[in-house]
Length: 188
Image (cartoon, rainbow, N blue to C red; front, side, top):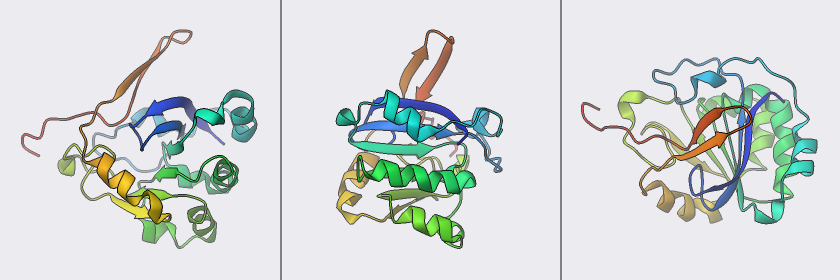
């Protein structure tokens, strides 16, 4: 799987509780003011992500997993393997997608993926509809719950203020903000 970042210990930013966050590379959409334009290209090494996670993540500290990108469903065979593995660690798996659920559900592999996750946040990011919701980038995006026990947790967190977490990778001199940036609501 072509992965951009894997970051553990992200608290209440891209989902409730302490999360492992995984960003994939590759996206064919070109949303205006995309939140992660650096992840559009499919360039990068193919990572055996399950082996990497087994070797590097302490799952006793992980309460949930968020998978974003790029577009995770463009690597849906690998995504299916990943969510099956992750489901053995936590039932709270969230995937962000720029595609609508109805479009994704046409693919039988995607329908299998849905059986292993708690929630999908679907739909393209629309800059004009960004109203600073904590988990959704814009109002057109929807929560699709596959595990109803997580619904109240997600919906209550979504009402809180956006506060991206800065992360600096010293060895690469890379700065990354995790979470949605707060934006001005003037003229939105």
